[in-house]
Length: 179
Ligand code: AR6
Image (tube, rainbow, N blue to C red; front, side, top):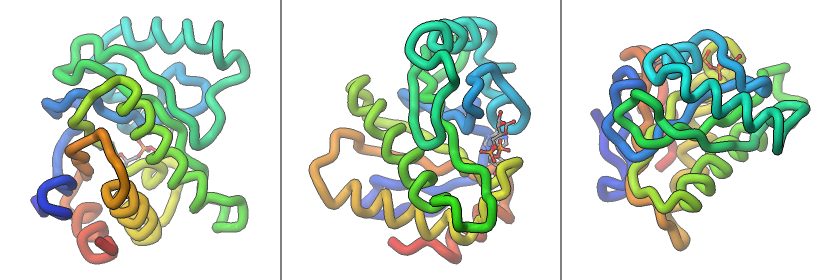
């Protein structure tokens, strides 16, 4: 575990579905109807209620799916976390399709949703760095810069945990983060 910015950021190894924070972020896809990776795990542990709420979001605000970089909220179902913030990270196409900015947007819009909920402690998985193929070292630089800037300004969220699924991903983050 590594602590940054006076305890405002914690990077650690773990399973995000077990995190005891106010809200966990899901690396979803634009369908919001589930998938593999961390998305599959969150729906599996959180239960059917989350999927039902996602379906409702699709029927109302986002009939064409959640655009990349945006975020929406459901309750946490059976998870310890009270809420799940679902965001869609960019698919990596080589870096010329605005992937960096879209990844930053996914983090920032998720934080915005947390602020709207009035919650203080949230946890993120390493969005886009699995199936979506975003380079992990590059993601570490982008995410650390986005979060550093967030905490520099006026901020309502007090703790952001970055939960890596294995030691290797955690190490890549630690080596490349620019706090
Ligand atoms: N806790 C924490 N991190 C996890 C967990 C977990 N339980 N399970 C996996 N990870 P991915 P993406 C890590 O592929 O790249 C889904 O099918 C994993 O090791 O879950 O944004 C969605 O439905 C990796 O580091 O998300 C989308 O279709 C990170 O979470 C698509 O994948 C993200 O990997 C999204 O792809």
